[in-house]
Length: 346
Ligand SMILES: Cc1cc2nc3c(=O)[nH]c(=O)nc-3n(C[C@H](O)[C@H](O)[C@H](O)COP(=O)(O)OP(=O)(O)OC[C@H]3O[C@@H](n4cnc5c(N)ncnc54)[C@H](O)[C@@H]3O)c2cc1C
Image 1 (cartoon, rainbow, N blue to C red):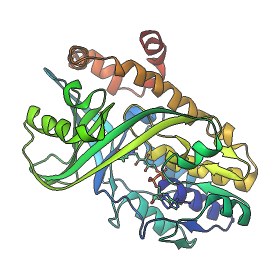
Image 2: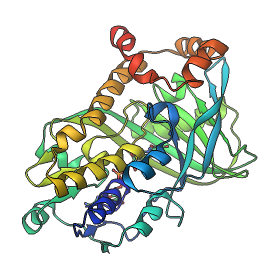
Image 3: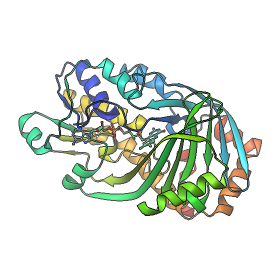
Image 4: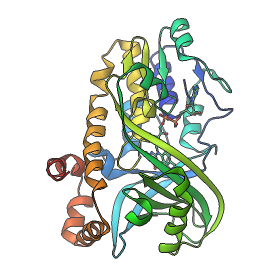
């Protein structure tokens, strides 16, 4: 259920293993409704050095990013830090033929039934297995113990301007983002996604926070389209119930800190396929993803307490070459190794 990254990656792996499958997609097409550029941040997936290479070598999935990310500029209210290096990739999310989803569609041969909204209980009766890849927690909440970690509101826009296509810009400021952040990621030299991910806000507040973001940061780009959505992140006790597997966001495999989940969506889809085809224990396979979401939930609790002066301190620290080199000039799994400190501080 769901022809997003997780569902399509699952179908791709099932086909490789000789298992026929049928895909049901609620929309009339694949790809996100929102046109947006996202990212695979290298720091997030360590110790994996290159997620695209990894997907190709480990799972035979050939996907192309838009381009490498070589610079990230981070702003706190008073300071700015710039990091350079192999910082990850920009990825295309939209209905464009080159979006990650549409690249995956071209690599599967299974039938995709569009415009359908099947009942998972009926599918569970009719098929050997059901893989829930719907991108939201509504079904897992019915079948497993579920705890919502955080709900974030996202307001985004496609903007026109003059951009460096290799640079991402991030803004941290509790006045408009609370414990979230704003970002700008370029499609190309002239077009970019500008978005605000804000935590602990009411829906009605979003426009005011967005306007404050644009005003405070002096972002007066021409806006050609906007989108708004909310994203729930949470933790489920089980990720397989009887013959029903949960993958991607539908399983809660989205990072509660930055809202990244594309890589784990793909990987969990593959794990579900391998579990179905080879009888492997799915819970064991997804353990590393579950652990990472747990770790990042602790980071989330820590970040929730930060004030603007703390962001200023952090960005100033990042300005020091020695700190920058340790974090960005190496492949050290910073998220894992800084976790004991975060656990004490949270
Ligand atoms: C604005 C935004 C920016 C993001 N940026 C990044 C980023 O930069 N990097 C990153 O790693 N992650 C990012 N993410 C998160 C990432 O997009 C998700 O983690 C990833 O898409 C999850 O994939 P999925 O296949 O589980 O779900 P989805 O991509 O949501 O796909 C679910 C599919 O299921 C379909 N569906 C839903 N309900 C049903 C139903 N009942 N029956 C049939 N089909 C159904 C939907 O139409 C959709 O096609 C971002 C998310 C958002 C919202």
